[in-house]
Length: 343
Image (tube, rainbow, N blue to C red; front, side, top):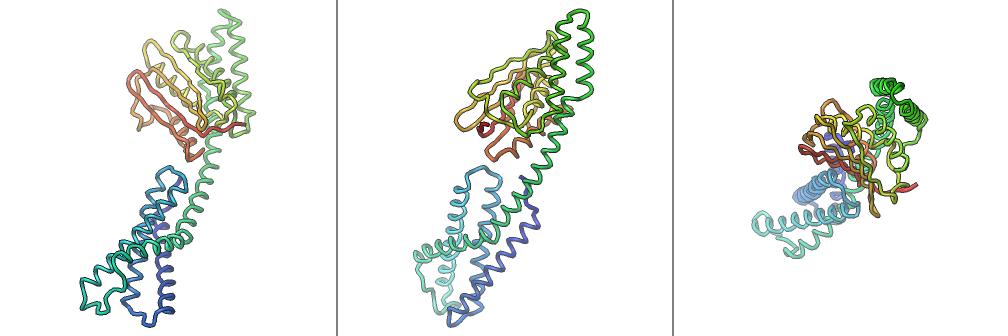
């Protein structure tokens, strides 16, 4: 999710503090017989402390994935604790400075802590309307804009990857070499290449089933195996129970291609690429493994942007989706976890 601009976020918090403080000043002026500058300052400090704590915690929660009810519970407790501590601090200051506060405090420490907690929760509701709700609406709007831009980018990337001139040219060269040696295999490759190109050009959906994804990838892998005969092999471990689950179109293609070119074929003797797809009641798990030299998970593989594109598509698919990379010499494992959905 695109983060809220810092200046805009600070301005919204500042506005919330000013509005809330002004409202409470007005209420205090109406309800109290004597509304002093000292009372006004105390209200301003209390509001700033509680809203400041809420804002800091809310920003920290924004980087984590957890249910909304848990976030709200944490924020409500934060507001209560911040308010309670501020009220207790006021009582301690008044008690410690009797000359400055001759009237003393009307509350004990215990009463200040309890009443302060509930006052903080009331202020939390006001803060949610002034700060958090507009922030979430803005974040969702930015997220939708990024999703739309990424759909267009993914569409272009999918067509480029499948129709990439070198891929098509090398495949045609492989077919030309097989025409006299193995005419049947040449015909099969022509049919497979035609199917791949047709599917890419005709596909207009953003999602399709695991069965459709794997069928396309098998054709893609068949061409790669023929081009690198004897040096490249694929293994498929797809649970039949997830065949009707849906995922973004060709989400796994860049991972498979990376595993081939930057993994298996980096070994002098070649290697194997494994695709595993399984799931449980909540999640769909897709794993691509290769036997290459490995790479640092925090850096992109050489000459490749496929992993970063997949990472962004996964992040925008759902807050519960994730991409994990585990790489070491001789083994690289990329796992995509998506919420399980069916057609």
